Length: 330
Image (tube, rainbow, N blue to C red; front, side, top):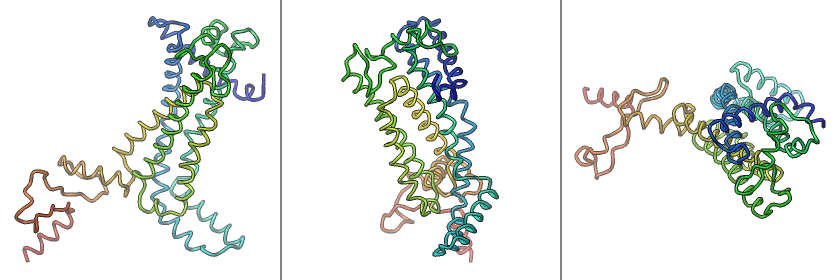
């Protein structure tokens, strides 16, 4: 057993059991035990279990990101305070004040990485389990968890569109159409990297306040926006088909989950919050706590009369409306 297998063995054991249990479930429902789609659904079930388990960490990530964005003005003032000071004492003082600021607000720049860091050992464990299926099936390795030799034989023989789940872009395997393997894995790699890019871009364009967008650190975040999909895209050529399926489903979950969060619980001061306020105003709902209400003009209202030149009346806040009424009374 290699070093990674020794370190990851407990997680591999759990991953193998979850796969085996879902495989048993779908087999009981009448699906082919040796069918590739039975194993695809089993991997999907594993993905759902993993992502459901990290929901508390995702909630913590969202809260931490919001706190980080809310304290951006304070961080900018701190950076301005030490601007041009390159001596070691000033650098140390700036770091200490930043840490004190993070501690005061209960956040950290690394909190947003928690869901990914938790998923990585699971991802690597699934990678090792699928990669070792041929050896377990051949009796060259001992079974891991619920992945018995009989199940390994079934999984080793399972195919999707004629492609084994253990095949990868760089290692298509024998007795298989290499080009078919490369085309399917390439499509999944593009989907995996593309969904990751769109998810991060949606976060940056819709759910960040102006202070966060104007932060000097934003340039680093933009670099990561393009760098991470490239890293995962290049790494994807080594992933077996089964692992790519897991990662595509996981990224799809992340995209959908984040879309719901941004639409219904946006960051204060962000574009998403303004859009939410407009939707609530159109429906006649009360504004969000801490947000200035917006009075929207009905779409079927006439544009003549009180509006000059036939121009569309702009949304007016309740505060400004009250000021106009006071002026009229005077």
